[in-house]
Every structure is written in structure tokens, then in C-alpha cells.
Amino acid sequence: MSEEKPDLKLDHRKWRRRQFIAYGVFALGGVATWRTWSWIKHAPDVNGTQAPLRRAFEFNEGVNSVIKSHGHLAPTYPIEQASRTLRSNGQAGVKQPIDLSTWKLKVVKGDTPLEVTMDDLRAFPKTELCFEFKCIEGWSEITHWAGVRFSDFAAHFNLGTKSGAVPDPEKEDDLFAYTSLETPDGGYYVGIDMHSALHPQTILAYEHNGAALTVEHGAPLRLIIPTKYGVKNLKRIGTIAFSDTKPRDYWHERGYDYDCAL
Image 1 (cartoon, rainbow, N blue to C red):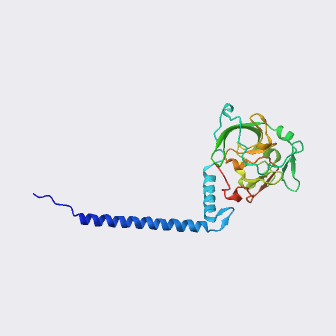
Image 2 (tube, rainbow, N blue to C red):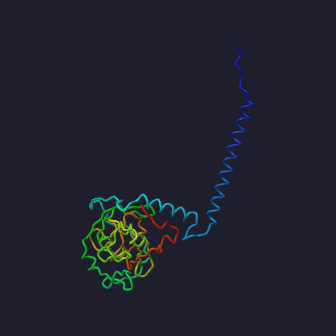
Image 3 (cartoon, one colour):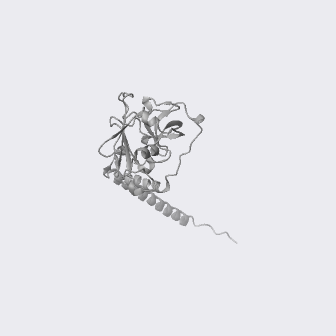
């Protein structure tokens, strides 16, 4: 019985047809990708980035706000694991000399700003925190800080509420939506959602590795907020205010997402 020979011409035609379809799919995919990129590239600019990308950032922020509760804690470490040094990185807002002896924290509260001294802050119970400080550039270090828990500070002065009462994360209607922090010269500024500000690990830090902050790391007082990337951890706080509208944010204006949550 003779063995049937394959039809090589038929197989070759099938292979060519499949090759043609594959090339067509790749070509259409390439055109679609090019047109999508062209559309994004020429879209209106919104706070330093194209509108479609900004909408994607805002969608991610919304998802993050749902899955990250007030009780979500950043991992902490034994103090012995803390790095003895810390990169200073950006110096926006802290380049100018400052007289630490006359510094006062200004808090916008009604018509009369509240002024708080370092002695006032040191009178609060000290909160220590050792966590992995993460930079949006990709590096990280385990760091040790100490200062006043922001929630304790806000509760003592009845800050962040429309009624002037002690802030309670459960009373959404009474809380302002945001707090803003700026350096004394206004050169650097961040906006923080109120729940993140009142997070139990958010502190107004005046010490690093058991010593007073150095000027390059934000003396005399800086924000430490472990649930956010380093760009939100503002150095040399000059002013704190509260609002229901998003405050301006230095890196948000330059294309980053507003939340910068970890």
C-alpha cells in the first residue's frame, strides 16, 4: 500500500496566509499604538502631564483611598536597623539660611494664625518611628525619627475640623478634606488628604537618629508620613493650613500624581 504524500503547495499556501494575517495584526497593532501615543502626546496639559495620564493617576488615587484604611500601617523596624546616614536629596524650599532660634510654626486657624514654638512641640508626648523611607526615584533606607504625632497636635489645638472640635476620622462631615504644608519661603509645598494627616504614623519630626534635625534634613521641623513617598515628607515646615479644596502641591504641578501613596 503506497503512502500518501503531503500536498506541499497547499501547506505553503496555508503558511503564507497565516503569515499575512499575522503581519496584518502586527501592523494594525502598531498603527493603533502610534495613534494612541499621538493622542496622548497632543492631549491638553493638566498639572504637568497629559490629560489622559492625569485621569489615570486620579483613578488610581480613588482605588487607593478605598483599599487603604486609616488603620493601614507601614512596616516598622528595630531602631538598631536604622541607617546612620540619610540622603538629603531635594533642597527646594530649604536653600535659604534660617534662624532656628526665632522659628515658629504658623497654623492658619480662623482669622488669627496660631504660632507654635519648638518648646510647645517638645511638651507633647514624643513619638518615635523607625520605618523604610522610600523615594519616588527608587531608593529606600530604614530611618529613625522622633517628634509629635500629627493627630495629637491637631487634637490639642482642635485643628482640621469645621466645628473647631477635636478631629475624629469617623466624623467625615466635620473634617476638612485636606491639610497643606509649606516651607517658610513658600518654595516647597504639599497637599495631604486629612485622613493621611491624621494617620497614627504621621508625625511632625524634630529628631533624626536621636539628634535634632540638621538643616539639610529639614530643621527645625519636618513632616514624616510613612504611607507616602518621600516627596510628600516636607522639610522645614513653616505654615500649616486646612481646606476642602485640593491645595497646590509642588510635584503634582510637575506631572506626578497627587496622592503619592505607597
